[in-house]
Every structure is written in structure tokens, then in C-alpha cells.
Length: 214
Image 1 (cartoon, rainbow, N blue to C red):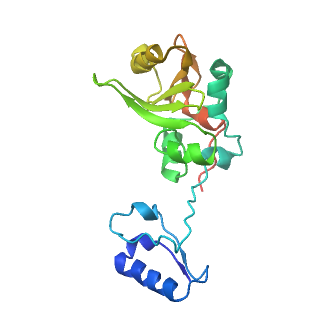
Image 2 (image 1 turned 90 degrees about the vertical axis):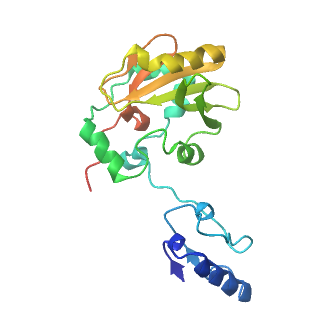
């Protein structure tokens, strides 16, 4: 039996599944799916531990949808200056908004966890904030200690002050700081000093034009 949106059913339903599996433990009797992580649903107290295998399925990234290679993190750690020579497709703010509303992974922060597990990254990711309120949206670190800081702006222009917290992070980390990136909705990559660059958001998926509206 296949049952969708199981998180809406509540504890009584999950306890009934548990009782049924205890009576007949053959695998494959039930397939339970949902649009949220089963173990994080606050209204469910039963985890079905020992009775269920959990598989997380993520939607396609924009890179997958446009047929591009999702190699941004490899490139920004290995040769961030090369990204400044890219000529990505020009997207309007409306097109970026359409991508966000379509679903999938059109940006770097809100779904960074899914990206790091499913696509590129084998290091760790954190959010940086110090006692003075200086913060960086996303900090990525390789096992070797190399660091990339990422900020995201919904603006078509970037100014030097948009890098002030990345500059703080760079100066604290020193030589292990690979790059500080501000993603924005502008048309072309821009340098902003020592290991600091501004990149169009579309470079996350290789700079290709967005897929057509379904």
C-alpha cells in the first residue's frame, strides 16, 4: 500500500502502521511518502525505528533542469578568478522569481544542506555571526580547512559595503580563505578586491538560461 503525505495523518495512523508491521514484518508492505522530513514532524511521536527505511528525495536543481554540470563549488574553491571570465545568460528579476516559485534549488542558502549532500560538497557548512552582529549567510569549509563565504542579494547592483562582513571573515581566516562571493541579479561577474567577487546567481547552474515555464 502506498500512502502519500503521511505527516498529515497524525500519531494514531503511524501507530496503526507500526502495529501492522509488528504483526507482519515482511518488507515492502507499506510505502509512506510526504513533503517533509518524517523524523522532524513535531506532531508525530513515533519514528518507526527498526521498522522502516528512510530515503530522502530532493527535487531537481536548476542545473539538472537546464542540463548543466553542477560544479560551482569545485570551481570556486579551485580557481575563483576563473569565474570572473564567465559570460552567463542574462536573467531578469522576474525570471529569477519564476525559478524560485517553480521549485527545486534555484539558490545557494535555503537549500545548501541538500546541495552539499546530493550534488557537490563533502565538507561542512555553517552560518557565521560574531558578537558585534557581523554575519555571513553561508560559510563552506572543506576537510582541508579551505573556506568560501557566500552572501546573496536580491539586487542588480553590488557595492563595496556589501562585502564588509566577508572582508571580516577573510581577515580572520587568512590564507585558508579561498573566496568571498556575493550573488546578485546583475548581468556579469565583478571583482571587489582580494579574493572577493560578485557573481550573477545564474552561475550557480553554469550560467545557462532558465528552462521554459511549464
